[in-house]
Length: 156
Image 1 (cartoon, rainbow, N blue to C red):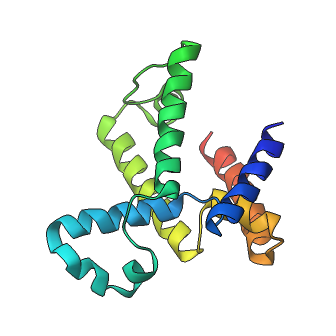
Image 2 (image 1 turned 90 degrees about the vertical axis):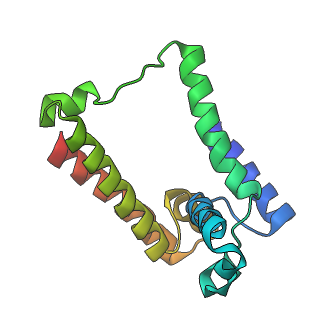
């Protein structure tokens, strides 16, 4: 049922905005908005920010909605809890807060770099690209799953 909903949502996004669903662009837009706070209109001198305009649009709000929806879901289900170091991480790597934060930060940097280098994230390639039958997106989606399984086996 959820798959059908994502498919219908994808149709609507192409129909209304001629753009597919993706999340990594919103993070790039946020970086541009933050840069604009310090450099003003000079941010638009960068060729990347002429193409990916740093502004709040429906894609940016989608990412905000995902975060708020996950938060609301955890509250409503009664499973919300704040954990500085999750139990599974502590069991495998110890309870060091700096180590956990460093690993999370480096993982986030790698994820952001990789998604920009690959021309999109898991939602961009895995949903939008595969439904358009883009070979590169199918290859990326396969690699996401293989990489996720291998990483899970290595870490846990």
